[in-house]
Amino acid sequence: MSILNTFSLEGKVALITGASYGIGFSIAKSYAEAGATICFNDLKQEFVDKGLEAYKEAGIEAHGYVCDVTNEAQVNEMVAKIEAEVGVIDVLVNNAGIIKRIPMVEMSAEDFRSVIDVDLNAPFIVSKAVIPSMIKKGHGKIINICSMMSELGRETVSAYAAAKGGLKMLTKNIASEYGEFNIQCNGIGPGYIETPQTAPLRVKGNPFNDFIIAKTPAARWGRTDDLAGPAVFLASDASDFVNGHILYVDGGILAYIGKQPS
Ligand code: NAP
Ligand code: GCO
Image (cartoon, rainbow, N blue to C red; front, side, top):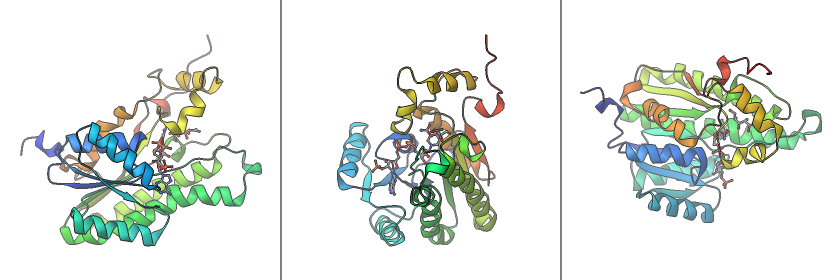
């Protein structure tokens, strides 16, 4: 097989959670371009419908499902539907996620739990739902969308950092427990990416915007399409011996102390 063919996703079924827009949508588009059949979910039918429209505009016939990834019954029902209607899931991207930016001592336990539920419990639930069929099929790829906050903390994101730190270790544990079944589980750790989730940080005049530029050697915010190549690599045969790895796609943030004040 030529080296380029090892990056192909032809014939693969991919489920990207929370992929009506944002990072998930961009990863799904790249998978479709590499040949995969795209399945995605969102919380509400209206968002699923908007997502289906957006995929159609991109020339992609996607399969959309209403599913709250924190609800195990809904997840199991969605996976069963996909297996019946589309096929066994070869590639799972645990992308759905939320963040609440609240100083820790002001954050309610309920808010903390809700972030852990979506960003950590849900990847456990969805991975658990797809692994048995991957074992039967003899291969599988699970990609967890981690974060800079899998490695670093900052003010107001205690729940998110705890979840994303846990997601890094869940990634390593799935890799350890299911590697012998030819299932590879890796993470992608995006830097600061231009999506609705970070829109509040990028408003004009917000000092955080300049802060991130100074912390990023690439001296820019990331774009969702910066994640496409790494995501295709981790979903493809080209990464069959890469397991338990978190691939940081951050423009160099984690390597950099930050631009010296002029
Ligand atoms: P986003 O624009 O806020 O999109 C998040 C998606 O997840 C939305 O489609 C949302 O659906 C869906 N979602 C949330 N809770 C859900 C649930 N319980 N069940 C099903 N779907 C749910 O976020 P993003 O910036 O694209 O981020 C995607 C992932 O990348 C997240 O895990 C995030 O933590 C991670 N990440 C983002 C950045 C960044 O800079 N943007 C950097 C590193 C990591 P609704 O529209 O219905 O709410
Ligand atoms: C924040 C941002 C970050 C990004 C991302 C960085 O408030 O610090 O939302 O957490 O979303 O996770 O990798």
